[in-house]
Picture 1 (cartoon, rainbow, N blue to C red):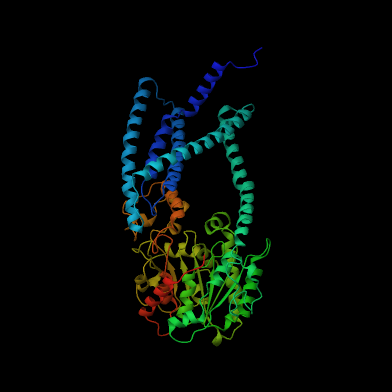
Picture 2: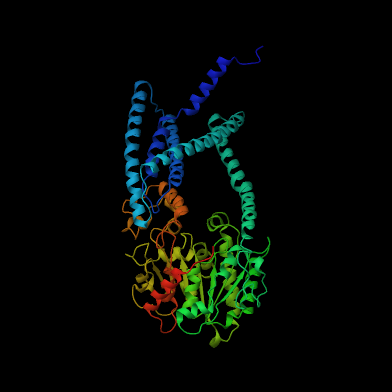
Length: 561
């Protein structure tokens, strides 16, 4: 009996296995090539070599899978390449693949630089392509190896099931069982563990920034003399928010008259299991203790995942109203905004609803003639959460004195409804709803004045035509969006085209670059919120000249990070 394989035989076995692993079906190879070309077409944001490689590798894997499926269906119907026809087909495919890829790579460099010119970042050259190709090859090999491992698992399960069922049925059942098993491990068990691990990790980061800046001494700020909250309990973004508050002197230098210290109330994320409604009530108690309900304006802000509040939004109102304002917010997660949105977006909505309802309940207790103006605001995931307290435009107009939502996501419930109900002929990137009577959308400051008079409560959405966070949606996989049917919006390349499946992946990757572009592009809004608030809630006697002055002042201020 032989208990070992001779070295020469072992080498032959390894060669055969390697050849089998490297062999790819004709249709799968064709699908891989075509989708690799599609991935190199332009979208909304410039891409680094790494992000382009990630996108291309994902598209190649999708193309491989689609092609393999198509080939299997053709073979199942009796179609098969054999003999000389097979050789000729492979040679033609190889020639087209090489020539076509060289052409598309050259075009992709031109398209990439066109997008870079539109958003105002540096151009790239030949070595960008070289690095992209190298990283793509590595990523695709890893992804293909992983997918083949899953397929092998499905085959093993299918062979076991085949002892009891027909071969065709066992193959399908084996694949389904493997898919469900992987899904449950990755999303179910793994997802919950991942969420817990990420929460713990970012909770540690949340404790940073304790000693860099001391606790405030002003009684109008959380963690100050009149506050019930400890400085160390606010979390990193809470401490940044409080420490960044402008002083009465800062504001007075702009208004050229005595100003007040604005109130800022903030509640950090509580221990696990604490009801968000209890934290919202704590925020109201803190706002009360700091004198927030005695101010002219109360701004209820839903922050992003880790509790970040856009200083340009908050300070615009504070400077505009001479410091006679109060801003209140709370932290509902330790995760960065995009992680919170992907893994646990319900938290944002729960926080937005709980915070506004708590503030509104206390606000109603004030005699009507003495009530401050009440506004709501939020950016990105904060806008997604901030909308949750309202059923529609009329509800917003009835229960607030204004709202500003910046960089909304495609999942924003009200934003989606308002956009879908826009007047015929108005573009998706700049819709008009009910003649702009209550709700308006703007990309540039001058667009707030369209279509005419804006009386009563004003609700504003500030959004960019090339912001992938606003325009990404799973529906892009199968449906061509209106913004690609219509005339391209500001900053969008005329060469952007909708490609089923690919466009969804492109915008998904674009989101990672949306905050790495200059102000006024992508998800960077700069001082645009100053112009927005000047239209939504201007104090008496406010002028366009004062708006420009304030935008310059806020644009030159240095924020803590």
